[in-house]
Structure formats: structure tokens, C-alpha cells
Image (tube, rainbow, N blue to C red):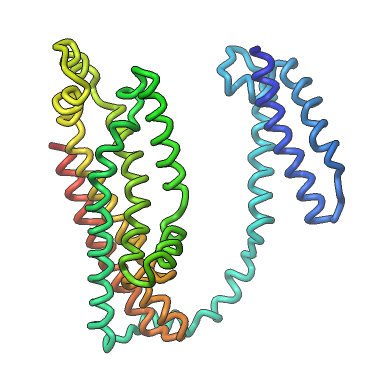
Length: 322
């Protein structure tokens, strides 16, 4: 069983390496490698390397004595990954340094903002701040309750608990993996263009993100009070109320303020697809090539984010220290 595990890990590593090499040969030199070779050759290499005692798989598995060959194997995989990234991204350092003049009009507008539009842009900025605030506030009760069911140390005591844990964790991960801008597109179609759609997008994403943060904080609590309360014959709800809640309230507040900080920034991006706020105004001005108005919006966003960073950082520090 041990060697089967090592072979599977090593096969996956070499399948990745050979597949990357095949893709690079095809992309750069139009040389095609048969699929059967890509799938079978890693198996042969995996067998040879595993039984030689110098595989990355053995190192990952914590084997006591591993020959140095694993270092060369890891280096090949890392270098190949960087080369793949370079080719896929089509990195052009020369264009970056020689074509900066194309942005002259944009940079001129950014550093010469149009303050005549200050009042309407401030109104859009206020809308963005409150949009993010409401999304955060409405996400708190849902995330708070669900976080208890997503904590392994609280739910793994029974089969039903395990099922609830896996279900909530899976849904949370799925919803969190879908970016807020995608949720905004869905809700713009659902409820129409405007801040309500943006708020709903941030609300859904905030619940999923806070469930993860909250539940991980529960998993890191001191088990002593929990065991003491259980010893008195307390129910599950009483254990959560008197043993878990006092240990998590301050970190929960810190995480919530941090999430509001994130939502203010994300609200700008959500506005690009019709989610309201200053993001929508930024998109409209950019489409009209009104770079001075774009510059004003960018400076306002930067100012608000800077203030939010200082404020939220200070509050989190005080809450955690106390």
C-alpha cells in the first residue's frame, strides 16, 4: 500500500512534467507527441524513481532516508512551471518598457482629476460604502450560525454531524470560489442593474468567506472549557453558548471588520457589471474615455481604501489584544 501511494504521487508529478514538455514542444515548435506516450512514460519513470529511493513522493510522505535526486526532480517541475507561465502569459518585458507612451493620455487624466464631478462621484462613493456595509451586516447572522456546523471539532462526534460539516463546508467552498463579480452578473439579471444587485453579490460571497474564517477560529479554541461544560451534562447548544462563544467573539468582530474592508474594495469591481456604486460610474467614465473623471474616481477610491485600512487595522489590533 505504501509503494502504491508513492507511485501514484510520483506518476502525477511526472505526468505533469511530461505534459508540460509536450505542450511547450507543440506551442513553440509545432511538434506533436502522442497521447499514449504522455500517459505511459510517467508510469515507467515513477516506478524507476520510487524504487531508487530518491523520489519527491518519498520526501512528501516523510520517509526517513531519501536520496538527493528528489531535489533535481522538484527543481525541474518548478522551472518548467515558470517557463509554462511565461509562455502562456505571453510575457513581453520589452513592450512594457518601450510602449509606456501609449498611456500618456490616461496618466495625464489620472494626475489631473476633474473636481467639477466631485459631488456626484462622492454620492456614488457613499453608495459603495453603504452597499458594502449592508452586505457585511446581513452576512453576519448566517455566517455565525453556519460556522458552528462547519467546525470539525464540534461536528465530528456523530454521523449526522459529519454529514452537516461536509455539506456546509462544500457549499461554502463552492460559493466562495465563484468570484463576487460573477455573482453580480447573476443578480443583475435577477433583480436588475443597481446597488441591490451588487449588495446581493457581496452578501453571498461574504457569507461563504466568513463561514470559513469563523469555523477555523472555532477549530482553534481551547478544548478545556468545552470538556468542562460537557462534563456537567450540558446540551450541545449550552456547550456552544458557554464554552465556545466567549472564546470567539473578539476574533469574530475582527474578521467581520476585515470583511467590510474587503467588501468596500470588491464593491468597485462589482459595479463594473452593473452592481451600482462608484464602480458603475468608473466603468461609464472609462467607456467614454473621460480620463480626468476616471482619475478623480481612482483617487477617491484610493482615499477610502486607505482610511478603511487604517481604521480596520486599528480596530482589529485592539480587539485581538483585548
